[in-house]
Length: 172
Image: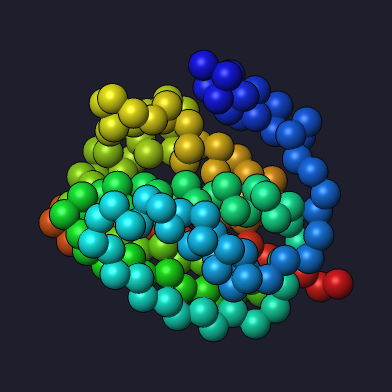
């Protein structure tokens, strides 16, 4: 109950829950996140493929970036209960003329229908009937937007899902 209330408050008043904002290396944060979710990945046969090619730093709260990435990784692993491949990548990518870094989390799970895909960022929407609050992706979207970034997903039934988080590179 405390976790749910905390997440609700964070969603409703995100500015009150953010700590220091510093320069971050997305590659380093992604590596840290893998350590944080290792216990979940050990429960299923998930092969991890990494392609970390980002060059540059972003200005963001480290804990918030970890929260977003961990949420995406956990969702990906949960979508592959019989095992599969988790691809994690970072790369430099421009969006509308702005230099940024993309963080990609891709799974080979069951994928999502267009109807589900259109609702995944809605607060309280969940496909996990007995677990989950339906706030993870909604909170993740709120966090990323606060840093002038974007989060999007593509999915194909039977082929898996790809989440892309894009954050502008810091000019500092």
